Image 1 (cartoon, rainbow, N blue to C red):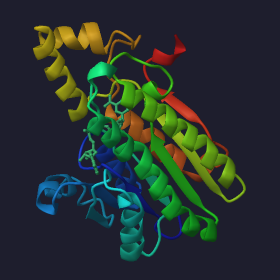
Image 2 (tube, rainbow, N blue to C red):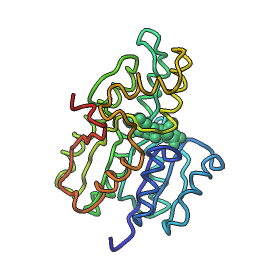
Image 3 (cartoon, rainbow, N blue to C red):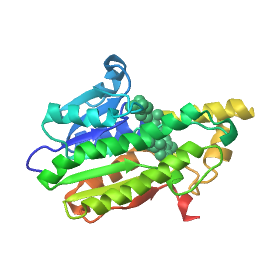
Length: 259
Ligand code: NAD
């Protein structure tokens, strides 16, 4: 890299997003991190990214709000002068049978993962097109390729994220821009730890039992994926040697979708 490239990772104060931000900062990208949280709540995450030599800054934006993603990209470009790498990572979960699925949760899940990606991509593409280089990575899920019961909004959203990825990849194929989805199986992050605790309570099981019998049941390796594995793939996709990988949905799921 001659000039520093600038990356934005949405939903990056925790879990996979924080891990991707850390890897990109270590590789020399300047990195914008984001969450809906107030700056003082995001400070510990920001702190873990200092000392890399990268210019890492926090941008508060609630991506559940219409147009939040569009404005976020505008703020990042205003701060750094450009945006070269966009990682749409923010995501939330709700588990309930469809008859009981609260409509507000349905809308919020779609807003945070799908609508926000639409808005960030729209805002980021003109600059990437002008410079003839860009990387867009959408964090989908094994649930973008396979369904599980009680996760209607999440499964529908992640399938749609893959559809969005493929479409934008075709629209940008001759512009030096690649657009890919990473589809993790279960990754050990706060999002999953909270679900394990919830399900243990709901089923009267131990957390160990829930992990083994529910979470790791579809994952043939019987091991959680680690956030660093997702971060390494994101870093690879950002490299110049990944220029021909576009429109892909890349599984990192311990064999889940091989079945
Ligand atoms: P996490 O809960 O650890 O982190 C989610 C991040 O998103 C946090 O920084 C949170 O502040 C942010 N966020 C939540 N709502 C937001 C909003 N309205 N606006 C802005 N930021 C918001 O989650 P994670 O497990 O690291 O998941 C990250 C992504 O990976 C999600 O898209 C998730 O669907 C996907 N994923 C996770 C797993 C897994 O097993 N953990 C598996 C497949 C896919």
